[in-house]
Amino acid sequence: MALNPTPTFQLQPSAERVALSTNYITNFDFLNQYLPDTYEKEFERYGNRSVASFLRMVGAEMPSNSDLIKWAEQGRLHTKYVSVGTAASAGDDTAQFQVNDTLPGGNDRAIRVGQTVLISQNDGSGINKGVVTIAPAPTSNVFTVAFYEAGGLVTSGTGVGNADVTVMIYGSEFQKGTNGMVGSLEAQDEFFENKPIIIKDKYAVSGSDMAQIGWVEVTTENGATGYLWYMKSEHETRLRFEDYLETAMIEAVPAEANSGAIAADITGSEGLFYVVGERGNVFGGGNPTTLAEFDAIIQRLDRQGAIEENVLFVNRQFSFDIDDMLAAQNSYGAGGTSYGLFDNDEQMALNLGFSGFRRGYDFYKTDWKYLNDPTMRGDLPSGAVNGLLVPAGSTTVYDQVLGKNAKRPFLHVRYRASETEDRRYKTWVTGSAGGASNSDLDAMEVHFLSERALCTLGANNFVIFED
Image (tube, rainbow, N blue to C red):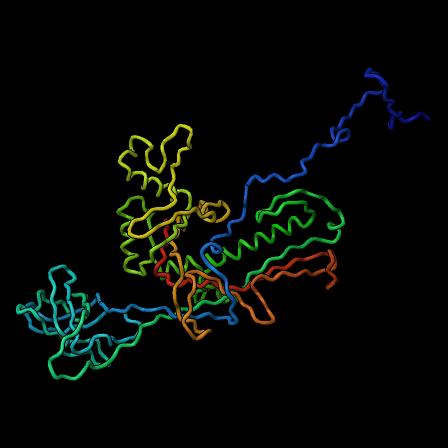
């Protein structure tokens, strides 16, 4: 019986570098001889990956003990109707008009006997001024005006159900020795509400994995540095959850009737983009790149709250467009780089950007990372948002929970809280590993929860820029 050729005899290393049959390795594996060099520190190839900070910059957080938040916002002080029809003929000394505007309170009650009105033809053919002689009946929006002009109504109407003229109330006039104004006007408030949503996340690691410790040096998005082992992923789960606390308030929408979400008993909430799209101002079709386009936005703001200071949160392209627009206002901008407050010293870096400008109001510009991040709003093929104009400061509203007027930031988050339960940012550990001992699960689970809603006050002062 012969000796098998394998396994062969043991190789004998030589004391010198001499190629012999006894020290020849036929199957060489690099990792069998050498251990790789490893970098202890994690390389931050994406920089700060968090997209949260917007609401921390412009808003505030305050508790609420209800699952419904309601507030009232002031209506207009003066009254103007833009869809008023008449069947009167040109030259009539008096005319009957009907208000066809959609009114929140049903039939109109703002027009009273003795009030003076300006009547402007919607086709631009002229104006009349007159005094109301017959006010609308309780079930009607029809009123009668006697004109001051001897020539009467300037243009014939096309029918009481049409939008022939715009009517503006500017005062009143009464005869001597007459009674006072009949009727009074109530303040027109608009009531809004929103409901909080519950946001959750979880991180889990098995007990076996916790027994094998591997260290890595990290620098986190919140500025902390040091060494982490298996909790590295837990830390990133926490950062991701904190981002969602903000992005959920920005993107949330209420579930529509007969939708799948309603069928699943999920009702949604009114996020920032939804509210501004519904009750605010929308600039569509790209970015404003000329002063004329910004002037149109400013004129719209004049018709709203006329807030003196506003902040533009924009993506990178919108920021470049604003810089180019402002640079073009310099008479030397086309042939050089003279704009900006510096001496053009050869040792000075050239600043080609602007942080703000004044055009009727003060506008401050800042990049919004959420709109640039490719894993979030950046590079969306449709439904892109390029920027948001946010008024600075606070506004006064009637808080129905407090039962009084209160100063509130235009944007603020209300979270559920009571004396025994604070749901602003809850975290707890379950399982039987990592120090937890409250279940028979051979793992450690870290849970995160928050219940919150965003209140957007004075949405008519916001502008959203969409494609």
